[in-house]
Image 1 (cartoon, one colour):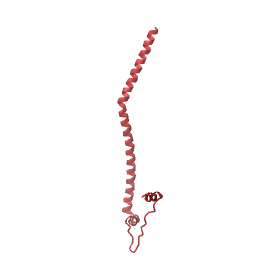
Image 2 (cartoon, helix red, strand yellow):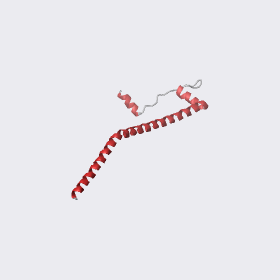
Image 3 (cartoon, helix red, strand yellow):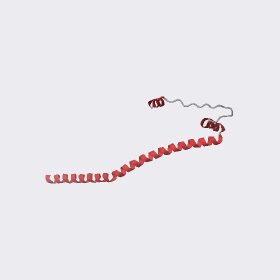
Image 4 (tube, helix red, strand yellow):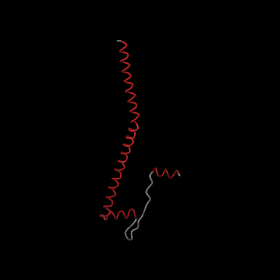
Length: 110
């Protein structure tokens, strides 16, 4: 009776070893797929973020286009600010922007 329990224990251990070996084989077979899925999910998140940024930019540009087409005050402001246009007899003064402390340090290093 004692001998049969040893063989039963060994049989259970053998089945456990076979099960673990099968699990290891499945894991090594599917691990590259799991990594590929993870990479694709990260890429999807990145693309979704880029799409959201571009949608926001598109909304801003559409608003700017609408203002350029319908608001003469906006058109006047853009002409004065970006194109340095002024009314007849007007003198336009342009000043360089005041450099930030980090900009001053970069120019003093040169």
